[in-house]
Length: 511
Image 1: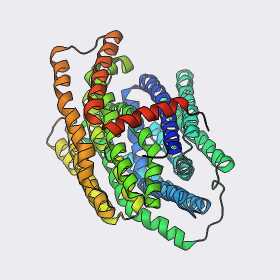
Image 2: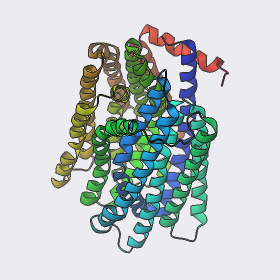
Image 3: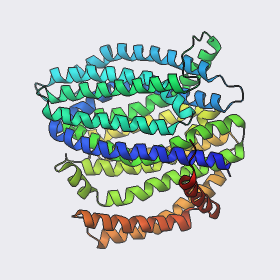
Image 4: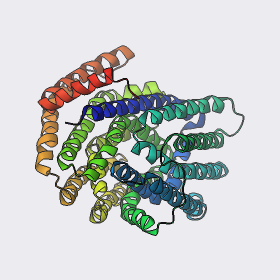
């Protein structure tokens, strides 16, 4: 087991991440409803689609994000790590990446938006304004990456939560300004979102500079360090490109085969999925620095235990939340949005299933990256992820329903778990047999007992038509899920650990 101080820190960090996530989730749901009504389905779809074009050019930045987080966490865990030097080198690289993104967006991206995508007639002027504002917001986000990574490496999740709350309040202000603005609402919305991203980036910069050791910029001319960072990132480019190409490629294929309204449906479905997956993301992000530091310290036994438990708890957290939401999804979408675009329900359902499967993978790939041995892994996982695009194209070309694109995504995510297990075993002393015993078997047993429960609800209990019915149904489902997970999903030691962590949250009062 981990030392008591480490458990308390992890409990505090996890709690801070959950507070941040819950606040942003409620703000996000409220603002999405208002923004959808203010913009209309067409403009809402336009905003999501145009943003995806710019994001596609940030695959290099995504690779560096992973490298930055890994190296800063590693330096923090190393005995003689030089955090300031690594941070400054990463910042220099991200400034160059911001310039590259600007050039690509204003050339290839601008051509693609104006000639290849389908937009409503008479809205191209607004599309181009939105595109320019999105580029600026993207550049702010790229520059923010080293500061974000430094905060996480120092496990300052409380500040991270406060920054999220500030961001949520600013997004809430956007809604009220949008309602009273006489300007074109789509263009004005894009402008306000860009301002919010800039303000939050400035907050991260000031906090790192004033509060964190290593957050002050120093001039770094160490070519060996740059080569190490870029060499590591060179292989992560494959995975970053594959991940972004898959997500944005699916959005483009939806637009080409089915039209901009379904891009609005996809944007809403992604928001529902994001709200649910944030519970897992916050949990995993609190543990990721520890996984990297354990690799740096060479504590393989503790690393295996932490990987297994993080994967299993991630799956169970998302499972417990997803079932009542998916069961009453039509009701929730109606309450949230009123009228919503066609296929929003179907997209939500399959994207959540795909994310549930993928929740097992977070600790696996973090641990693979911590070893630094990623070349063959990145090639293999990238090819697998990109396979989703030809399969999705085939679905559209054959005239199948659009949700089949995301059925393919769920199946590929399942294969990706197996690939990550194989490469983690190759690069470390990780035991797949122990993972199967401690993670896969309990998940199988829980699913085996949950299946008849879910079937009974679908067969004999009508979905909710009011708030009280929804709350009662959800409470019954969640209690049954938690009971099954507690009895069949957790070992005796893990049950004691959960009780201990809950006690730590209640009694820990240190900073």
